[in-house]
Amino acid sequence: MQDITKIRQLANDRLADVIVDATGNHHSMVRAFEFAAFAGRVVYVGITQSDLQFPHAVFFHRRELTLLASRNAMPGDFRRIVHYGMEQVGLSLAEAQSYNIVAMVIFLCTRWVCTALLRYYSPGRMLTTFACGAFAFTAGAIYLPGNVGLISLVMVSACMSLMFPTIYGISLHSLTKEESKLGSAFLIMAIVGGAVLTKFQGELFDSFGVRESFWLPAACFVLIAVYGIRTFAKFERDSPAPA
Image (cartoon, rainbow, N blue to C red):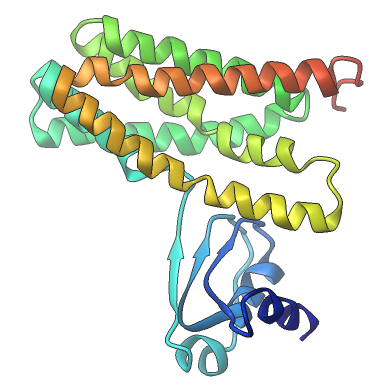
């Protein structure tokens, strides 16, 4: 009740229209419904392996809530593979979609691999390495011909799987509890940037062509690499390696 009172104080005696849970903690994910206003939306970004049980009538049904789930990747991140395959390689829609599915599987599998690697390598070092890899693969999609360029584009998904959750963890490291609440809210809001940049890339696609449009995500990967380098230099250089 104390948490709900705080939300009402912040929102002029209303509950939240949209609740985004990125914790992956099943207790937090279940409680998210309590804070949603009538006809509100609850969005799960975090993932838990536990079964979720929540009061159906009291919160979900009576308030007419909508439950959504996001995997931290925009649909446009994968649709670009379909466009590239059809425009640059001459594949049919079904053939291009098969590469799209492969990219999704790689994205998922690499997330597990990266989770294991973070036991041995610092987040800043990992983020820098994968951002540089993403830039290299994006450059390959721009310059390499035919199927080789398409495969290079598919491999960008392997590098992207690490990025958002690692940036999330780095950004909130060493913050107080109250600072973490505010910081996590701004980080979730930053996901909207993925939708905005996808629109910009579409405009570049229409104006200059599919290959040239990939200079936009390439520039984003450079910024992420710089963030990783600064993280490593400022916080991790003199720290002991993870056990």
